[in-house]
Image (cartoon, rainbow, N blue to C red; front, top):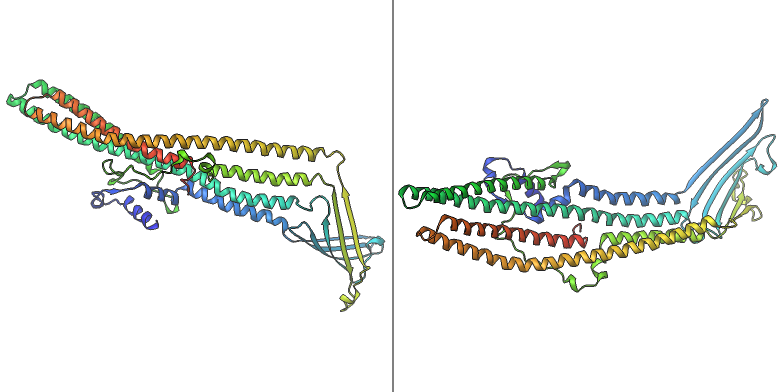
Length: 467
C-alpha cells in the first residue's frame, strides 16, 4: 500500500508540462488509502488509541506504592518539647489489601507517653484488610476496569470516525466521477455539433440546405457550448472538493493535477460481491457495528459501577495489624517479639443508606436506558442496511438494462445521421436524436455512480469503512 501511496503522491505533484500530458487514473482504492493514512481526521482518530492507553496508565496509578514522611517539632524557652518523626511505605494490592511499613522515632521533654519509642526508633510492618465494604471491589479497582473498557471503546470510536471520513471521501470521489464523465460526454457532443454546424453552413452556401438549418444548427451549438461550460465548472468544483481529502506527510495538502482522472463509465464494472444481507438476522448484521460495540462497552462500564454501588451498601469494616520491632546496634531481628504489635479496627455505616440506595437505582436506570438505546440503534442500522441493499440490487438491474438503452439510442442517432446525410432528415430530428442519446449517457453515468454510492452506504451502515 505504501508503494501505491508514494506513486500517487508523485503523479499528484507532477507539475511539468511533459508529465501533465499523460492521463493517470486515480482509483477509489488508491484514493481511500491516501485518505486513511494521511488525512488529519484519520490521524486524530488514531490518537484516540493513545488516549485509551494513557487512561489505563493513569488509573493504574491508584495501585502505585506511596511513601510518606511527617516531621513535627516544638521548641519553647530554649527547650525541645517534642520531636515526632514518622515515615512509611504503603503498597496497595489488586485484592484490596494494603501492605504497610513504617518507621517512628519520637523524643522530647513533654512527649505524649503513647508516642514513646525506643531511642533507636520503632519499626513496624503490617496490613490493612477490608472485611466489609471493599472486599470484592472498591473504587480503585472499579476505575481500572472501567479504564480498560474505555481503552477498548477508543478503538470503536476510531472506527466510527474513520467510517464517516471514508464515506464522505468516497461520496466526493463518485461526484468527481460523475462530473468528469459528464464533461467527456458534453465535450464529445459539442465537437460533433460544431462539425455539423460547419457542414450545414457549407451545404447552405452551396444551396444544398436551406439557411434555416444553419440557424437550427447554430442554436444547438450555442446550447452545447453552455452545457459544456457548466460541465467544466462542475468538474472543476468537484475536483476541488476531492482535493480537500488528499494530504501527505507532515500535513501537506495535495491537489488533483491536470491529467489525473477517475475511471470512465464505459469501462467501469458494477458487478460487486455483496453478502445476502436481506436474508440475515438483525443480530448477525449489526453484531460488529462500532456504534453498538460502544453501547455494549458503556453497559459493561455501568455494570462495574453497579457492582461498586452494591458494595457501598455494606458497612465499612477495616482491620489493621502492624508488627513492631526495634534495633539495638546490629541486633535488629533478635528483638522481634510476637507480643509486640499494634492493631485496630474501623467500623462505620450510614443508618438510612439513602445516598447509596439512590446511587444504585440511578445506575440501574442508566443500564436500562442504554440497553433501550442500543436496541433502537440496532434496528435503525438493520433497516438502513436493508434499504441500501434493496436499492443496490435494483440499480444493478437498471444499469444492465440502461447500458442496452444507450446502445439503442446510439443506433437511432446513427440511422438519423445517415438519413440526414442523404437528405431524408433534418437538423431538428438529428438534434432530437442526439439529445436523447446524450441524456441517456448522462443518466447511465448517474446510475453507475449511484450504484457505487449505494455500495458505499451499505458498508457505511455496517460500520465497515474504517476497517
